[in-house]
Amino acid sequence: MYESRDFGAMPILGDALQDAGCDNTDVLDHCRDSRAPHVRGCWVVDLVLGKE
Image 1 (cartoon, helix red, strand yellow):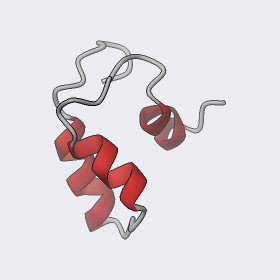
Image 2: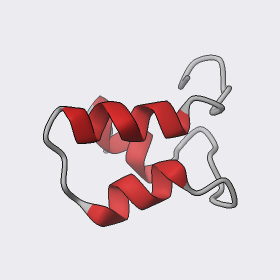
Image 3: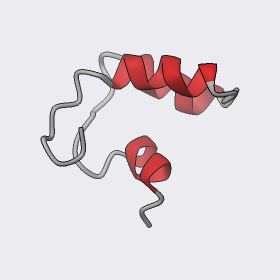
């Protein structure tokens, strides 16, 4: 997703994070919001990848 800049899987990422125990509503809502700007540098993707 990060390298290809194809963020169509953001809802799937949200489901996977929730399945892994994430209960942060800001993170989950952002992943599932089709109106959210999902671009390289997206704060959720950077958080998951450990980027600063």
